[in-house]
Length: 405
Image (cartoon, rainbow, N blue to C red; front, top):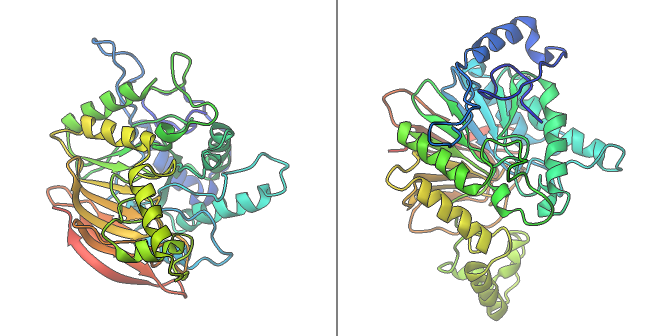
């Protein structure tokens, strides 16, 4: 499904949609469309060398604050994290972009219409979108593995259903990269930093179809072309990656060999309170996930290929930061890999807490408590990061503040 508001993708075969202006009102809609229309010439055509340029959008025009939250796909009726997120977004809504970093709906994405769980799925997605929209901010949704039918055979259909449900809610909402495509979709900001949005589950999806090859609606027809587009974008100026899957992590999907608790209490992978000692089995479990891994672990074959692709694309021009979810924790990792100066993990979007997390050599901060991250982008300055934990009454408590140099 193509972007339906003007300018959402340069060169996209957009279809103008007739619908209400949503929560922003007619004046907001008209002003915002005016900004989006100024996307310049089409980039749909091929370059002289036969390659396709990455599509871009002015959706982040005027944005200097990112609120980064992931894995929020099972919010309570009065979810403290969403209440806190809305309050933070309302402090400067016209300059704020709320980014949901995937796994927006547990356990298997949005079911078809008529399914028994469809109404609850719609409620959960609407709760996340409306937390940002009612505050007056813009909101960006990225898909994660659970949105792709939990990596199941209905994955592509499920992620397209989610996109079709969310987009009509407001012209201030973007689902990206969209169409089940790998990306990148480029979102320039006034700071000079371009947000590069990737659907990393496209790399990991091995059940059912994914758009690729000559018949694909995507600008990048395969992984090689997607990484060529990302490499070109990185050579043009500083990038920040927005993805679901991190390049490094001290959570269950990542590296925990040095954490004795992971070896002794393996059931804490299911819930942090399961302090049941099983030392031998625990070490075997840690070794398995660290060497071979499940389909969603950094050690798995497809995940290793994703990381290798990103390393090649960003060789010599690392991203200023990569923001992702996936592991249910808040982590700030300084230069854990050559392709990103910082890896930020914000996957603890449901109160009261996420999963266990171990400290790595690169860890500057790590917690399993619920919360989200705020990144401030200003021209001529390093991005500034704040870690905000959330209380039971929907208030934020700042736990870390630092420049991402």
